[in-house]
Amino acid sequence: MHNNITIQIKNLTTGYKHKGHDIVVGNNLNAEIHEGEMICMLGPNGSGKSTLLRTLAAFQPQLGGEIKVMSRNLKNYKTSQLSRLVSVVLTDNSSIKNMTARDVVSIGRSPYTGFWGRLREKDRKMVEKCLSWVGITELADRKMQTLSDGERQKVMIAKAIAQETPVIFLDEPTAFLDYPSKVGMMLLLHRLAKTLKKSIFLSTHDLEHALQVADQIWLIDQKRGLTTGIPEDLCADGLIGEYFKHDGLRFDPSTSTFHIQHETVRTVQVHSESPDFRADLLCKALLRNAICPVVSDEENQATRILIPSDGTYRIIHEGEEKHCVKKIEHAVKAIFEFL
Image (cartoon, rainbow, N blue to C red; front, side, top):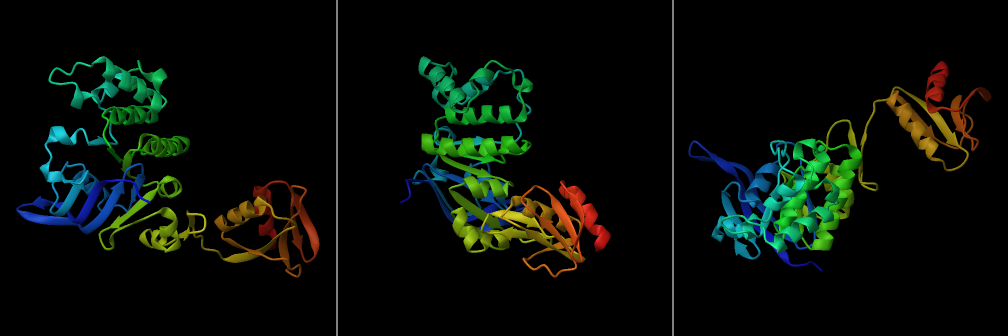
């Protein structure tokens, strides 16, 4: 059962005006965002992700259709009212300098601090809670320019949480982060959605991370429009593979991962005496070297690579063992002697 709807779009048209004409980017878009869910918007470059995100965040007007925030038309909100409902985290925060992390998070309290912007005791307590929630309490007194990209991004997320809005929009929050930091950021956002009952909506190019973490996926491109669903259904229906179909790329719906398709010019048999991940790694290395591995139990092939349980790789040619090596690299090099 879905939680309360926080954002609803009906027959939405997104785009912009140019010389008096409407330039349509997305048309007839329909979807809902619910409380306590993390939603990832995916799509190829030029698909309209940024335009839709900016439209939902009221940074640019819609060309048609309807956007409802907390059951009320977006157009009917004043900016001051919307600031208590929607917060936005953008990718580029490098311009924020000479402010401590605590100072930046404190800005999130501005919708509640009145004209003079003075923090009350409850505002200061909220700031400290937000620093703790995203795990950056120890960074509170550091200047923003001294923080890493990932640390600055966490500061901006803490600022958005301090704004106490039911909805948080993020534009490419994992951009410029290293792999472990990307994973950590996605897990953090998912945890915050669940524990704080927020609707966290983000655009991202990190497909495989999104498919593992998101509660809902929005697939968007200009030809197909907008399709929504849980990651598993979109994989099972073939939609993920279809939206990101490209020469040399194959999507495996069973693992929700993409694989490069290598062109091969020769084959070799690979036989493992027992189930062993090393066989998969060897096959990967062979494919990269234009060799197609044929996994079989037959022993009548002229040349094959045997993987026994002793940690070695053995090159068998015409029934005779020619090489016994311990590294995949050496096995791949040795097999060329017989192909």
